[in-house]
Image (cartoon, rainbow, N blue to C red; front, side):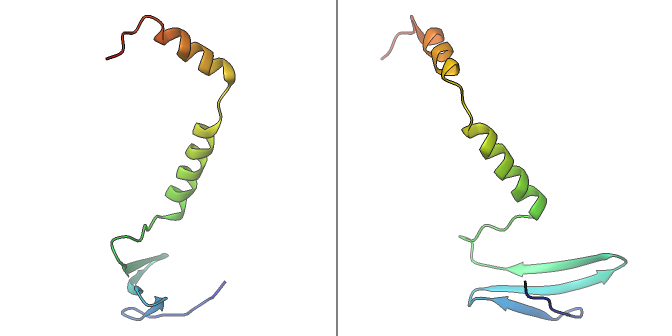
Length: 79
């Protein structure tokens, strides 16, 4: 882990295309500005963790779920 000390309006680069700037330090909070290409996904850590948990839960399935789905689709006409 890289640890930096920055003041307001100072920043740092990640690679050639991501710039992080300290916008404000107020109380116990730091406001950051992030400039990055549109194809880069940027998530708050707690949001990313939740996405990972939900993906893991969605990937869990039980063979009986498939049987129930198959049963519910019986009689459905296909085009």
